Image (cartoon, rainbow, N blue to C red):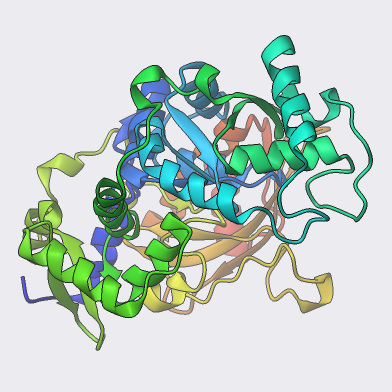
Length: 415
Protein backbone atom coordinates (compact mmCIF):
# COMPACT_ATOMS: atom_id res chain seq x y z
CA UNK A 1 0.00 0.00 0.00
CA UNK A 2 1.26 3.49 -0.84
CA UNK A 3 -0.43 5.36 1.99
CA UNK A 4 -2.70 4.71 4.98
CA UNK A 5 -4.99 6.83 7.14
CA UNK A 6 -3.92 8.04 10.55
CA UNK A 7 -6.56 5.82 12.14
CA UNK A 8 -5.16 2.75 10.40
CA UNK A 9 -1.67 3.76 11.55
CA UNK A 10 -2.84 4.13 15.15
CA UNK A 11 -4.77 0.87 15.15
CA UNK A 12 -1.91 -1.03 13.57
CA UNK A 13 0.62 0.23 16.13
CA UNK A 14 -1.67 -0.82 18.97
CA UNK A 15 -2.48 -4.18 17.39
CA UNK A 16 1.12 -5.00 16.49
CA UNK A 17 1.89 -4.67 20.19
CA UNK A 18 -1.08 -6.84 21.19
CA UNK A 19 -3.10 -4.02 22.79
CA UNK A 20 -6.01 -3.70 20.33
CA UNK A 21 -8.80 -4.63 19.70
CA UNK A 22 -8.42 -6.45 23.02
CA UNK A 23 -6.36 -9.10 24.79
CA UNK A 24 -5.31 -11.89 22.43
CA UNK A 25 -3.38 -13.95 24.98
CA UNK A 26 -4.36 -15.69 28.20
CA UNK A 27 -2.75 -17.02 31.37
CA UNK A 28 0.84 -18.20 31.93
CA UNK A 29 1.35 -19.57 28.40
CA UNK A 30 -0.07 -16.37 26.97
CA UNK A 31 2.66 -14.39 28.71
CA UNK A 32 5.33 -15.99 26.52
CA UNK A 33 3.23 -15.46 23.38
CA UNK A 34 2.63 -11.83 24.32
CA UNK A 35 6.37 -11.21 24.72
CA UNK A 36 6.99 -12.65 21.27
CA UNK A 37 4.31 -10.37 19.85
CA UNK A 38 5.82 -7.36 21.61
CA UNK A 39 9.43 -8.29 20.65
CA UNK A 40 10.71 -6.69 23.87
CA UNK A 41 9.46 -5.62 27.29
CA UNK A 42 11.11 -2.82 29.25
CA UNK A 43 11.71 -3.59 32.94
CA UNK A 44 11.56 -1.14 35.83
CA UNK A 45 11.86 -1.66 39.61
CA UNK A 46 9.30 0.90 40.83
CA UNK A 47 6.19 -0.54 42.50
CA UNK A 48 3.93 2.42 43.26
CA UNK A 49 0.96 0.34 42.18
CA UNK A 50 2.63 -2.41 40.13
CA UNK A 51 5.82 -2.63 38.09
CA UNK A 52 5.66 -1.20 34.58
CA UNK A 53 6.32 -4.63 33.04
CA UNK A 54 3.36 -6.15 34.88
CA UNK A 55 1.05 -3.32 33.81
CA UNK A 56 2.22 -3.91 30.23
CA UNK A 57 1.42 -7.62 30.44
CA UNK A 58 -1.93 -7.02 32.15
CA UNK A 59 -2.95 -5.00 29.09
CA UNK A 60 -2.24 -7.93 26.76
CA UNK A 61 -2.84 -11.13 28.71
CA UNK A 62 -6.26 -12.14 30.04
CA UNK A 63 -6.12 -13.23 33.71
CA UNK A 64 -2.48 -12.12 33.99
CA UNK A 65 -0.75 -12.31 37.38
CA UNK A 66 2.72 -10.83 38.10
CA UNK A 67 4.17 -14.25 38.96
CA UNK A 68 3.53 -15.38 35.37
CA UNK A 69 6.37 -13.24 34.03
CA UNK A 70 9.03 -14.54 36.43
CA UNK A 71 7.89 -18.12 35.92
CA UNK A 72 8.09 -17.80 32.14
CA UNK A 73 11.50 -16.09 32.13
CA UNK A 74 13.42 -17.59 35.04
CA UNK A 75 11.88 -21.01 35.61
CA UNK A 76 11.03 -22.05 32.06
CA UNK A 77 13.96 -20.08 30.52
CA UNK A 78 11.78 -18.65 27.76
CA UNK A 79 13.22 -15.12 28.05
CA UNK A 80 16.24 -13.18 29.25
CA UNK A 81 16.84 -9.60 30.41
CA UNK A 82 19.66 -7.56 29.02
CA UNK A 83 21.03 -4.12 28.19
CA UNK A 84 21.64 -0.66 29.56
CA UNK A 85 18.08 0.05 28.43
CA UNK A 86 16.90 -2.92 30.50
CA UNK A 87 14.61 -5.09 28.39
CA UNK A 88 13.32 -8.65 28.42
CA UNK A 89 13.60 -10.53 25.13
CA UNK A 90 12.48 -13.98 23.92
CA UNK A 91 15.25 -16.51 24.61
CA UNK A 92 15.43 -17.36 20.88
CA UNK A 93 16.87 -13.84 20.32
CA UNK A 94 19.98 -14.64 22.35
CA UNK A 95 22.33 -15.72 19.50
CA UNK A 96 21.73 -12.36 17.78
CA UNK A 97 22.76 -10.39 20.87
CA UNK A 98 26.19 -12.05 21.01
CA UNK A 99 27.65 -9.50 18.59
CA UNK A 100 26.43 -6.68 20.84
CA UNK A 101 27.87 -8.50 23.87
CA UNK A 102 31.23 -8.94 22.15
CA UNK A 103 31.35 -5.20 21.45
CA UNK A 104 30.50 -4.51 25.07
CA UNK A 105 33.35 -6.71 26.27
CA UNK A 106 35.84 -5.03 23.96
CA UNK A 107 34.80 -1.47 24.76
CA UNK A 108 34.49 -2.07 28.48
CA UNK A 109 32.59 0.01 31.01
CA UNK A 110 31.94 3.73 31.13
CA UNK A 111 31.65 5.93 34.21
CA UNK A 112 33.42 3.37 36.44
CA UNK A 113 36.82 3.44 38.17
CA UNK A 114 38.05 0.86 35.64
CA UNK A 115 37.13 0.37 31.98
CA UNK A 116 38.10 -3.30 31.95
CA UNK A 117 38.01 -5.09 35.30
CA UNK A 118 41.19 -6.68 36.72
CA UNK A 119 41.56 -10.21 35.37
CA UNK A 120 42.04 -11.67 38.83
CA UNK A 121 38.70 -10.20 40.02
CA UNK A 122 36.95 -11.56 36.92
CA UNK A 123 38.38 -15.02 37.59
CA UNK A 124 37.40 -14.82 41.27
CA UNK A 125 33.79 -13.95 40.43
CA UNK A 126 33.52 -16.71 37.81
CA UNK A 127 34.99 -19.25 40.25
CA UNK A 128 32.51 -18.22 42.95
CA UNK A 129 29.58 -18.73 40.57
CA UNK A 130 30.98 -22.02 39.30
CA UNK A 131 31.44 -23.41 42.80
CA UNK A 132 28.46 -21.93 44.66
CA UNK A 133 25.81 -21.57 41.96
CA UNK A 134 23.56 -18.50 41.42
CA UNK A 135 24.66 -15.45 43.44
CA UNK A 136 23.68 -11.83 43.84
CA UNK A 137 25.85 -8.78 44.45
CA UNK A 138 25.53 -9.21 48.21
CA UNK A 139 26.68 -12.83 48.11
CA UNK A 140 30.20 -12.20 46.78
CA UNK A 141 32.82 -10.49 48.94
CA UNK A 142 35.14 -7.92 47.40
CA UNK A 143 37.13 -4.73 47.87
CA UNK A 144 35.30 -1.42 47.93
CA UNK A 145 35.24 0.47 44.64
CA UNK A 146 37.62 3.42 44.42
CA UNK A 147 34.86 5.73 43.15
CA UNK A 148 31.09 5.74 43.62
CA UNK A 149 29.34 3.33 41.28
CA UNK A 150 25.67 2.89 40.49
CA UNK A 151 26.42 -0.83 40.09
CA UNK A 152 27.46 -1.43 43.70
CA UNK A 153 29.94 -0.62 46.43
CA UNK A 154 32.27 -3.53 45.70
CA UNK A 155 34.54 -4.27 42.77
CA UNK A 156 32.92 -7.69 42.47
CA UNK A 157 29.51 -6.04 41.94
CA UNK A 158 30.86 -3.95 39.08
CA UNK A 159 32.57 -7.04 37.63
CA UNK A 160 29.27 -8.96 37.73
CA UNK A 161 27.67 -6.15 35.76
CA UNK A 162 30.53 -6.17 33.24
CA UNK A 163 30.33 -9.95 32.79
CA UNK A 164 26.57 -9.66 32.29
CA UNK A 165 27.00 -7.03 29.57
CA UNK A 166 29.70 -9.23 27.99
CA UNK A 167 27.35 -12.25 28.00
CA UNK A 168 29.54 -14.37 30.27
CA UNK A 169 26.93 -14.42 33.04
CA UNK A 170 23.16 -14.08 32.85
CA UNK A 171 20.40 -13.09 35.22
CA UNK A 172 19.28 -16.48 36.49
CA UNK A 173 16.53 -15.22 38.77
CA UNK A 174 15.38 -12.23 40.77
CA UNK A 175 14.59 -11.76 44.44
CA UNK A 176 12.07 -8.96 44.29
CA UNK A 177 13.90 -7.01 41.62
CA UNK A 178 17.45 -7.81 42.82
CA UNK A 179 19.49 -9.67 40.21
CA UNK A 180 20.72 -13.18 40.84
CA UNK A 181 23.48 -14.15 38.38
CA UNK A 182 24.79 -17.45 37.09
CA UNK A 183 27.13 -18.66 34.34
CA UNK A 184 25.69 -18.25 30.85
CA UNK A 185 25.88 -21.95 30.02
CA UNK A 186 23.71 -22.76 33.05
CA UNK A 187 21.00 -20.27 32.07
CA UNK A 188 20.75 -20.21 28.27
CA UNK A 189 19.30 -23.43 26.78
CA UNK A 190 21.91 -25.19 24.66
CA UNK A 191 20.01 -24.68 21.38
CA UNK A 192 20.35 -20.91 21.77
CA UNK A 193 23.85 -20.74 23.26
CA UNK A 194 25.76 -19.80 20.12
CA UNK A 195 26.72 -16.66 18.19
CA UNK A 196 24.97 -15.73 14.96
CA UNK A 197 27.13 -14.26 12.19
CA UNK A 198 27.28 -10.50 11.67
CA UNK A 199 25.16 -10.72 8.51
CA UNK A 200 22.57 -12.91 10.26
CA UNK A 201 22.52 -10.49 13.17
CA UNK A 202 22.01 -7.39 11.01
CA UNK A 203 19.19 -9.09 9.07
CA UNK A 204 17.51 -10.31 12.25
CA UNK A 205 17.85 -7.07 14.19
CA UNK A 206 16.59 -4.98 11.26
CA UNK A 207 13.42 -7.06 11.14
CA UNK A 208 13.08 -6.98 14.92
CA UNK A 209 13.36 -3.20 15.12
CA UNK A 210 10.62 -2.69 12.53
CA UNK A 211 8.41 -5.27 14.22
CA UNK A 212 8.97 -3.77 17.68
CA UNK A 213 8.01 -0.29 16.50
CA UNK A 214 5.17 -1.63 14.30
CA UNK A 215 6.02 0.86 11.59
CA UNK A 216 9.32 2.70 11.64
CA UNK A 217 10.45 5.94 10.08
CA UNK A 218 12.95 4.92 7.43
CA UNK A 219 15.49 7.47 8.65
CA UNK A 220 15.49 5.87 12.11
CA UNK A 221 16.92 2.47 11.21
CA UNK A 222 20.56 3.50 11.52
CA UNK A 223 20.08 4.98 14.99
CA UNK A 224 18.22 1.93 16.23
CA UNK A 225 20.72 -0.52 14.73
CA UNK A 226 23.57 1.38 16.37
CA UNK A 227 22.11 0.45 19.75
CA UNK A 228 21.29 -3.14 18.88
CA UNK A 229 24.76 -3.75 17.41
CA UNK A 230 26.56 -1.49 19.91
CA UNK A 231 28.54 0.24 17.18
CA UNK A 232 27.98 3.17 14.87
CA UNK A 233 25.97 2.48 11.72
CA UNK A 234 26.73 5.25 9.20
CA UNK A 235 23.82 6.76 7.30
CA UNK A 236 24.98 5.29 3.99
CA UNK A 237 25.19 1.81 5.50
CA UNK A 238 21.70 2.19 6.99
CA UNK A 239 20.31 3.20 3.60
CA UNK A 240 21.91 0.13 1.99
CA UNK A 241 20.26 -2.07 4.62
CA UNK A 242 16.89 -0.45 3.90
CA UNK A 243 17.29 -1.02 0.16
CA UNK A 244 18.28 -4.64 0.83
CA UNK A 245 15.15 -5.20 2.97
CA UNK A 246 12.91 -3.73 0.28
CA UNK A 247 14.58 -5.54 -2.63
CA UNK A 248 14.41 -8.89 -0.84
CA UNK A 249 10.70 -8.43 -0.15
CA UNK A 250 11.17 -8.30 3.62
CA UNK A 251 9.85 -4.76 4.10
CA UNK A 252 7.93 -2.12 2.18
CA UNK A 253 7.70 1.64 2.24
CA UNK A 254 4.39 3.20 3.22
CA UNK A 255 3.14 6.72 3.82
CA UNK A 256 0.94 7.90 6.68
CA UNK A 257 -1.72 10.58 6.40
CA UNK A 258 -0.45 13.89 7.75
CA UNK A 259 3.20 12.84 7.91
CA UNK A 260 5.99 13.81 5.52
CA UNK A 261 8.16 10.91 6.67
CA UNK A 262 8.41 7.60 4.89
CA UNK A 263 7.78 4.49 7.00
CA UNK A 264 8.91 0.89 6.78
CA UNK A 265 6.66 -2.06 7.52
CA UNK A 266 7.34 -5.79 7.32
CA UNK A 267 5.69 -7.33 4.28
CA UNK A 268 4.22 -10.03 6.50
CA UNK A 269 2.09 -7.27 8.09
CA UNK A 270 0.84 -5.76 4.83
CA UNK A 271 -2.37 -7.87 4.74
CA UNK A 272 -3.31 -6.46 8.15
CA UNK A 273 -3.01 -2.91 6.82
CA UNK A 274 -5.28 -3.75 3.89
CA UNK A 275 -7.90 -5.17 6.25
CA UNK A 276 -7.73 -2.12 8.51
CA UNK A 277 -8.00 0.33 5.60
CA UNK A 278 -11.12 -1.55 4.50
CA UNK A 279 -12.60 -1.08 7.97
CA UNK A 280 -12.18 -4.70 9.03
CA UNK A 281 -10.35 -6.29 11.95
CA UNK A 282 -8.01 -9.12 10.85
CA UNK A 283 -9.15 -12.55 12.00
CA UNK A 284 -5.72 -13.18 13.50
CA UNK A 285 -6.46 -10.50 16.07
CA UNK A 286 -9.44 -12.27 17.57
CA UNK A 287 -9.73 -11.24 21.21
CA UNK A 288 -10.07 -13.35 24.33
CA UNK A 289 -12.47 -11.58 26.64
CA UNK A 290 -13.75 -8.00 26.29
CA UNK A 291 -12.57 -5.54 23.65
CA UNK A 292 -11.02 -2.19 24.51
CA UNK A 293 -14.40 -0.61 23.78
CA UNK A 294 -16.01 -2.79 26.42
CA UNK A 295 -13.18 -2.43 28.94
CA UNK A 296 -10.51 0.27 29.07
CA UNK A 297 -6.85 -0.64 29.43
CA UNK A 298 -4.37 1.29 31.56
CA UNK A 299 -1.12 1.58 29.63
CA UNK A 300 2.22 1.03 31.33
CA UNK A 301 4.38 4.14 31.81
CA UNK A 302 7.12 2.63 29.62
CA UNK A 303 4.70 1.37 26.95
CA UNK A 304 6.35 1.62 23.51
CA UNK A 305 3.18 2.94 21.81
CA UNK A 306 2.91 5.93 24.16
CA UNK A 307 6.26 6.56 25.92
CA UNK A 308 9.04 8.90 24.79
CA UNK A 309 6.76 11.36 23.05
CA UNK A 310 5.01 8.80 20.88
CA UNK A 311 1.64 9.44 22.53
CA UNK A 312 1.69 13.00 21.20
CA UNK A 313 2.70 11.98 17.68
CA UNK A 314 0.28 9.08 17.32
CA UNK A 315 -2.69 9.98 19.53
CA UNK A 316 -2.30 13.74 20.01
CA UNK A 317 -2.12 12.89 23.71
CA UNK A 318 0.37 14.83 25.79
CA UNK A 319 2.03 12.29 28.08
CA UNK A 320 5.19 12.44 30.17
CA UNK A 321 5.95 9.98 32.94
CA UNK A 322 6.49 12.38 35.82
CA UNK A 323 7.92 9.95 38.35
CA UNK A 324 11.39 11.55 38.15
CA UNK A 325 10.13 15.13 38.25
CA UNK A 326 10.10 17.14 41.49
CA UNK A 327 6.58 17.25 42.94
CA UNK A 328 6.12 20.96 42.22
CA UNK A 329 6.87 20.40 38.52
CA UNK A 330 4.31 17.62 38.00
CA UNK A 331 1.32 18.49 35.89
CA UNK A 332 -0.62 15.34 36.76
CA UNK A 333 0.89 12.88 39.22
CA UNK A 334 3.72 10.63 40.31
CA UNK A 335 2.69 7.45 38.47
CA UNK A 336 0.07 8.64 35.99
CA UNK A 337 -1.02 6.11 33.35
CA UNK A 338 -2.74 6.73 29.96
CA UNK A 339 -6.16 5.14 29.48
CA UNK A 340 -6.86 3.32 26.22
CA UNK A 341 -10.53 3.24 25.18
CA UNK A 342 -11.29 1.72 21.80
CA UNK A 343 -8.36 2.79 19.65
CA UNK A 344 -7.64 6.12 21.37
CA UNK A 345 -6.08 7.56 24.52
CA UNK A 346 -8.91 9.45 26.17
CA UNK A 347 -7.90 10.01 29.80
CA UNK A 348 -5.25 9.40 32.45
CA UNK A 349 -5.24 8.40 36.10
CA UNK A 350 -2.74 8.45 38.96
CA UNK A 351 -3.06 5.16 40.91
CA UNK A 352 -1.46 3.99 44.14
CA UNK A 353 -1.76 0.72 46.04
CA UNK A 354 -2.09 1.06 49.81
CA UNK A 355 -0.53 -2.25 50.82
CA UNK A 356 -1.70 -1.94 54.43
CA UNK A 357 -5.37 -2.07 53.47
CA UNK A 358 -4.82 -3.45 49.94
CA UNK A 359 -6.79 -0.54 48.54
CA UNK A 360 -6.32 0.74 44.99
CA UNK A 361 -6.38 4.51 45.42
CA UNK A 362 -7.13 6.77 42.47
CA UNK A 363 -5.27 9.92 43.44
CA UNK A 364 -6.17 11.83 40.29
CA UNK A 365 -8.13 11.42 37.09
CA UNK A 366 -8.16 13.63 33.98
CA UNK A 367 -10.36 13.34 30.90
CA UNK A 368 -9.21 14.69 27.54
CA UNK A 369 -11.38 17.51 26.17
CA UNK A 370 -12.76 15.27 23.42
CA UNK A 371 -13.15 12.18 25.63
CA UNK A 372 -16.53 10.40 25.59
CA UNK A 373 -18.64 11.08 28.65
CA UNK A 374 -21.48 8.62 28.09
CA UNK A 375 -22.59 5.50 29.94
CA UNK A 376 -20.67 3.18 27.59
CA UNK A 377 -17.37 4.79 28.57
CA UNK A 378 -18.29 4.77 32.27
CA UNK A 379 -19.02 1.04 32.07
CA UNK A 380 -15.75 0.39 30.23
CA UNK A 381 -13.86 2.37 32.88
CA UNK A 382 -15.52 0.42 35.69
CA UNK A 383 -14.61 -2.86 34.01
CA UNK A 384 -11.02 -1.71 33.54
CA UNK A 385 -10.69 -0.66 37.18
CA UNK A 386 -12.04 -4.00 38.33
CA UNK A 387 -9.57 -6.03 36.24
CA UNK A 388 -6.63 -3.82 37.23
CA UNK A 389 -7.53 -4.18 40.93
CA UNK A 390 -7.71 -7.96 40.53
CA UNK A 391 -4.30 -8.06 38.86
CA UNK A 392 -2.56 -6.21 41.71
CA UNK A 393 -4.52 -8.03 44.44
CA UNK A 394 -6.44 -4.99 45.68
CA UNK A 395 -9.47 -5.74 47.85
CA UNK A 396 -11.02 -2.26 47.62
CA UNK A 397 -11.00 0.71 45.25
CA UNK A 398 -10.94 4.29 46.54
CA UNK A 399 -12.47 6.49 43.83
CA UNK A 400 -12.20 9.82 45.68
CA UNK A 401 -9.72 11.20 43.15
CA UNK A 402 -12.09 10.77 40.20
CA UNK A 403 -13.89 13.77 38.79
CA UNK A 404 -16.45 14.65 37.46
CA UNK A 405 -18.64 13.77 40.46
CA UNK A 406 -21.33 12.21 38.28
CA UNK A 407 -18.79 9.74 36.86
CA UNK A 408 -17.47 8.93 40.34
CA UNK A 409 -20.97 8.24 41.63
CA UNK A 410 -21.71 5.96 38.69
CA UNK A 411 -18.47 4.02 39.23
CA UNK A 412 -19.24 3.54 42.91
CA UNK A 413 -22.55 1.93 42.01
CA UNK A 414 -20.90 -0.32 39.42
CA UNK A 415 -18.03 -1.37 41.67
